[in-house]
Amino acid sequence: MKSTMTRKQRLEAIKVAGYHDDRRTATRLYIEGRLSLPAMQEAFAKGAQARAAGVPCSCFECKEAIAERASALLSAASGDRVRAISDARAIATDADTRGAAGFWHGVAQSLEG
Image 1 (cartoon, helix red, strand yellow):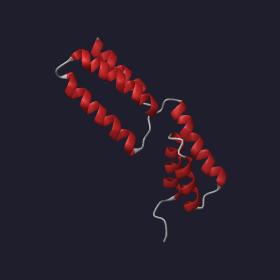
Image 2: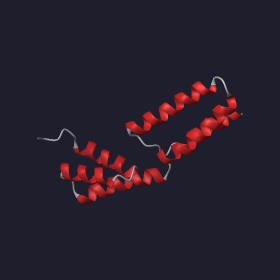
Image 3: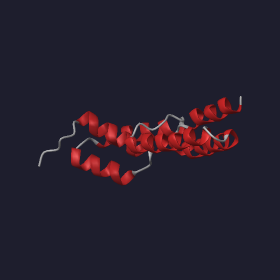
């Protein structure tokens, strides 16, 4: 069966795997796509570097998780400002693992001020 992913899409998926340090997925994509090893290693390294630099992850799962937390924060913020600030700080701590901490620290600061 022929793969429906283009080379560019496959390398982008390997980059996301690198962001999450998911070597198993990266290896599977590499083998299925018959990419060169240097191309796979470069894409994986770019993902890991993006995470280390604090760049937010672009994968659907990370965006969805952050959106769910944001929705919970906004509904809580309507009633209790102190709790909303606390929630924003908790999200920032959690988002740090996804590279979006700076945004949520900003939310907490804007709620405080």
